[in-house]
Amino acid sequence: MPTHLITGAGSGIGAAVARRLHERGDALVLLARDAGRAKELAARYEGARTLVADLADPDRISKSFGMQPMPDRLDSLLHIAGIVDLGPVAELRPTTWHQQLNANLISPAELTRLMLPQLRASRGQVLFVNSGAGLNAHADWSAYAASKHGLKALADSLRHEESGNGVRVTSVYPGRTASPMQAKVHSQEGKEYDAARWIDPESVATVILTALDLPRDAEINDVTVRPGR
Image 1 (cartoon, one colour):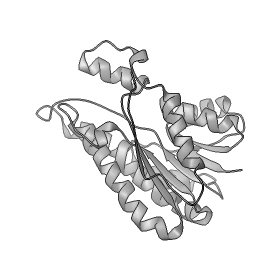
Image 2 (tube, one colour; image 1 turned 180 degrees about the vertical axis):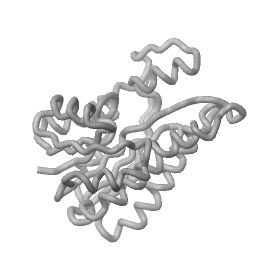
Image 3 (cartoon, one colour; image 1 turned 120 degrees about the vertical axis):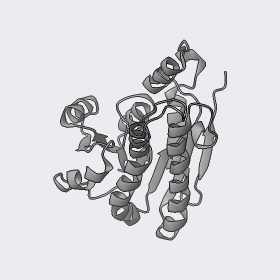
């Protein structure tokens, strides 16, 4: 039974992936920002384990893990959590930059570092849910896009570093996906949000599971998912 550590399992793409893996009987380890959230996730996914660490504070992840039992085996690490806060460069304060860089880039790097021994032992996979903003930046998206461009660099470097250890590395670049995050983006853009216009999280989950289930003679390095409507 493969074991997957998932961030962002509470909503959107992360919830779709967690549900699909849980339904087929895979073992889940779900990262939660606090004990209350961990209790909610454990109740939603019967039999799943939880780990508590706040991605907003990457300097404390190692300490948090040191106080909790860690999984002995890990077949995949799925970085799906993320935050977004839009605004022009002329108005963004350092706090906004730090928040997005911490959650979207530095914490995934730290979490990957801490989980690499288990992933190497299983010849497992690291999968980053990036964004179209990780390939192209537009007005008001500078901080978020910078974090996602950095995430692409992290994945590309990791792929070269860990190929000899049999660890596969995949980046998925979804376009706008119907989720609470997308609703927030529309609010910040001053636009009406219509979920039907955007990618269903289940469609992105299908892409992610395809990458995970690919036979060992191949790997998906980068895949872009765009709205089809």
